[in-house]
Image (cartoon, rainbow, N blue to C red; front, side, top):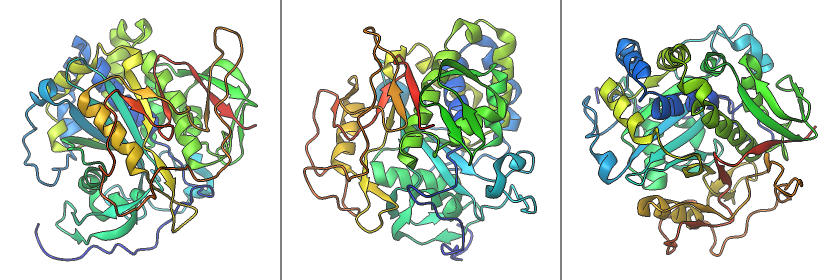
Length: 437
């Protein structure tokens, strides 16, 4: 670090409640555009060429993760341990797109791409690619999760002191991408070698690059005056441009209106996007692949470990043949925060089962539901299976949840079965947005 100045961790920024926050989880299309296009598509020759062609753009704002040098980790770990990649979506009002977001981005608000002031990491996804047999698991961490915050050093050398309680989505302004990675590592016990941050403009760009994403909208349809989204019930609705971003932002229009319900709704989109990117419509179209690669690489700020084109292609080759039923999206398990009803706390016991299953590289068996923002599509019997009703009550766990506890407090199962508090689905399951009307 260059000096011992302390970064101000008490500046005034927007704070987000679990049920009352107006701020969107808006980055998932861009994040998944990166994750899936790189992991599933870039192994194709034209996308590999694009990785080389646009490598200088991709590397321009690379951040060296704390504890790493500028050289990428040994990609051989893919064969022995698998690999973890952290994607963080930033809540930033870019000039080109802020007119779409109403009061969240006032017209007179200046956007400084070099400043972290008032910018939150509202989307935090850990992508785990296992060793053989290959599986991909995408774990979404709620933005309102209360965690212990480690000491972080930003790229300018400023230091943010460790905190006993901090909201997860404050990690970025405390210390950039490196602080998000360090915070998730401390929470999960996982080693993260690669990372990237993205802002919401790429949601529009990447959706258009692949010609839109088809989603199922169930329930009463989505009508959300906060985002301006209006979609009637539909088995196959094509999201493009701004509307795709509105779909990912919506909270009031799905499920119980909570932030956790929004995550499960976003998983509807992610599964549909995974199916689109692995379809013949995309994989056999060199022009689409090139446009997609160009768009994703131009809209991402990676860690230095993720800038090597060879590394990108090796990661892509490792995951490109993973079957859809082994491409799983899960929510990090939480309970109500005992100190603040508008926040959530880690459910360490349920999380330990998830980490154990990843370490053992066994198929994940989701015994919970898809989450409040999603419902299963119609089954073979022609009936629609809704997710269990969310009463808003805290989830019961066998032991009291201590926000300061260390992961690993309970013995984890060895068969891949996850507790009922781990919500999610795999990409082979067609889920529908649980529209609240």
